[in-house]
Length: 249
Image 1 (cartoon, helix red, strand yellow):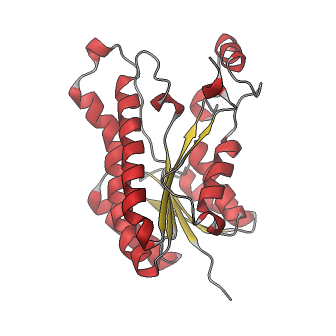
Image 2 (cartoon, rainbow, N blue to C red):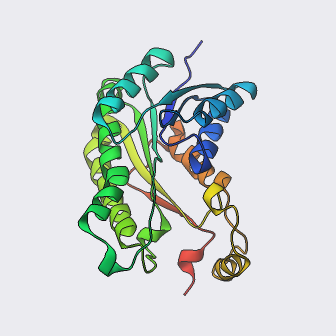
Image 3 (cartoon, rainbow, N blue to C red):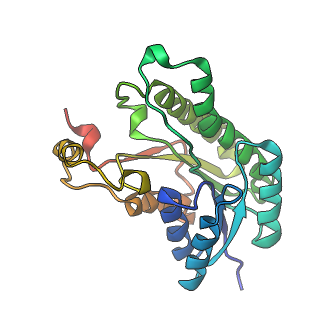
């Protein structure tokens, strides 16, 4: 019997990460659900996947900490097997502030999640992927990289850096059979957006040709495609999942 491929989804105890983890499990992958220490929700997500007939385990780690990342990847390999698919979804607070109030440390805080974390986790799984000459690395960026609203300068800057990181890795890793792509969500109501103000919703819908709000499942579907074995000849690409909003004037 062929062993299931293993996916590690960082920041998958809730929100988009949870939807991605559950979708990959339905695709037949064994999923490592990741959350911070003390986050019992990661175990709940893993349990829900198992209840649905999938394979999943919860692993707690701060993916901006190099030592914790090393332990995380080792633990996943010991429990489920080496990581074949890495989804870099972990995020943190995204404060809004006018440019004059954004200090360098505010930029560093965003870069910790969107550049440092991918570098740490990516480097930790690369030896195994290189040895197998196969792997999928998928980063979750944001439409904000292309459409930065006022007050989001640190976030938009870090997201653009993340895109550059993914493209450079894609070029370098392609000869090793490892693909690196990104998925850019539009505005997706998840937990922190559960109570979207009607005026905000109406304004957003007016700018979306598809005429509806996006869902976590829409993002998970795009990740599923990049993670699939059939996507082995696609690398260095970016799918913007925004219902066509980026096409609107």
